[in-house]
Image (tube, rainbow, N blue to C red; front, side):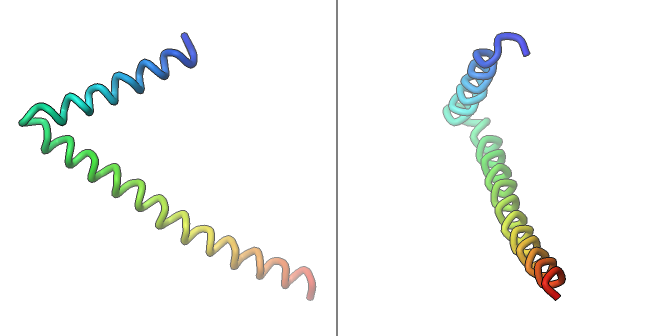
Length: 70
């Protein structure tokens, strides 16, 4: 990628700047709030499904190790 990693940093800074600007523009606040809500839902669902997946993998590992020993 061109200008790696500096172009990545500039892009992150640009996105953060736009989000901060959205907080100060009256008609953009609702869109910012809904965007942040969606981000929280996505992150929360990742942890919810990731935790369930870890439990299933742990159970399968126990079953596999029991079948090897028997």
